[in-house]
Image 1: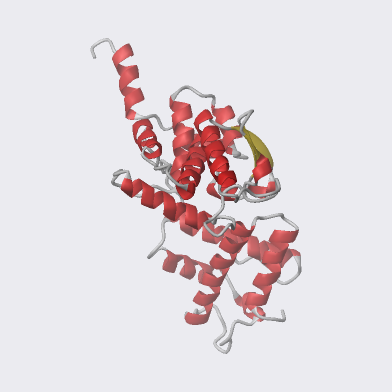
Image 2: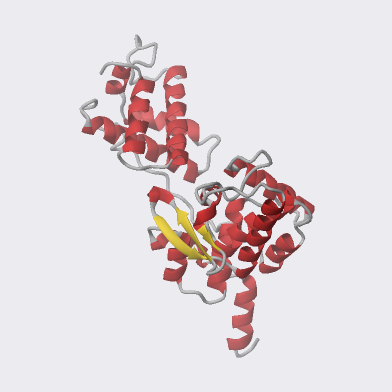
Length: 311
């Protein structure tokens, strides 16, 4: 096997992007996980690896076995939760399958390594009252404030991912029919309803852009822009929301994904069909949507008060 391990990483990431259609975000995550594994190999002497392999030559991978991988997982356990460890192991498995398919490896060293059993965690979400308080206390007195309110009304009003939000162009939103066209994971396109409040907030933002002579000229231009006229990043959206949640006095950091969780939770609490919520969220598997079927204590109390004979 010629070349360095990192060159093989490059070939694998190119394969994910060009042939599998993985997003840039997913490819970056895979690359980070693989680089972390390479750093482990470079810094940790392992009994199963030959002593004279002092650099990350691709031939080193021929000597990998499940003992080395278990040592790597043991190190990960010190600072990572089970879900993170499972994701990093999944990245390695995909990489080894790629090497096997292309003749770089004779056997898969991860074949006998078990995935850590993950606990079923309940996604963090806001109550309806806290959600309304957050949105209603957002200022709307200038262009950036109007943009912020439009962004977060859209996140909560449609349940889209923050990466999908920042990828929206002007032509993707129909405020008259209250729909938004989204390009989701795996380049899968879907059209989802847009709440009335979100549609109104987007229109107010667009009107301000037009008034200030900054309305983009074409439908392919970014819908939500930074102060310099460029497309907002997902990280910037997270920072803005965290600041606004502190200003609203919620007492806890709020991430853009928490708004998506709140969207799904509030729909299901109100009796929405699980399959319909799956379509709205853009989940391939129903089991992913089932994470949101936790029932709020208020709804449990309401059912209890109505049904229990000795309440």
